[in-house]
Image 1 (cartoon, rainbow, N blue to C red):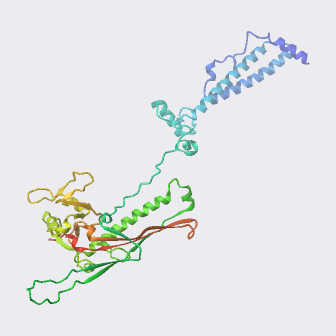
Image 2 (tube, one colour; image 1 turned 45 degrees about the vertical axis):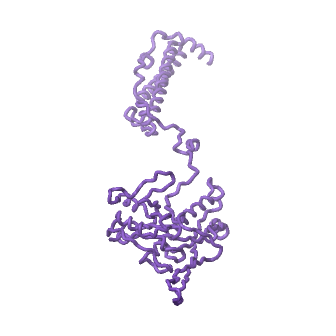
Length: 427
């Protein structure tokens, strides 16, 4: 049977070579380029016709009739192959449509990544940037490869530190406190004749003032691991921050401290203030500004000339920046500004020839306020330092934190009220 079939197959190659059916094999190429559903229908019909023709061909081969149907069978097979190729092309177009972002072109297919498709289309039209698979916006997609540089220093918020310490007398002590003696120099005297009696005269009296240091403290903490792993020297940074804070607190106390666990402030010794009677020699004298709520040129001149000339050589004007702004507008009777800029590097500007020192904690210009001080601060105010700043590094009390218990004992007070004058905003 196999030999018969093989012989019949060879004979079939010569049957009907010139007369193929006009069903599928003869269809124009354009008929198989329609939409997907039409293409599937064509392939289904071609396969069905091929099967029927194959059955007929086998019947004819067995009957040794019309062997050329073999050629027609091959043509139909080629046509099916062509349609399958076209189907593959359609599949590629469909896949591309999934990236298009415009479902109107191919049925209702939706883009799988609309944002990327939109960016790609914009890039094709305008040349704008599109997101790549690797990008620095996401660490896991490449951000780790594009690290940023960071500043290994720390900028701190402004803390205004008073210049009282720099202009005062400062001493260090080794005991719990400091006592200062004063005399009123009230020794009596008189003129007498050759044989006149010499009665007893008055004898100077003595008084003392105690300068007891108050205590400043800070107790910041950090974990041991933070101290070990930080890229900065946190211990030194904390020490610097504490020193700045202590200086700020001191500056406030040196001007307005009430003496309770802190220094006595110089403003508290002014006539009418809380400690006006504390010093044996009396209070710091007040000069009025000459206006109920402002400073005047006459008031500034009166202030300066009220100070004894013995202290004028080292005298400076102490006030805050806002008060300085107002004084810079003042003129004398000839129209000359009281304020003069410095023409020498390192030298302060002057007001009526007196150097100016800004103290941020001085009161502002308002009725009844002491807006400025004028005098020799070194002769007026004494600052007492006990030991200095101490730091106790404590890693035991509150594990795993390391505490930096920092203390400073400092006191202060007026030693000579005569070498200073206060300008009060008052008519």
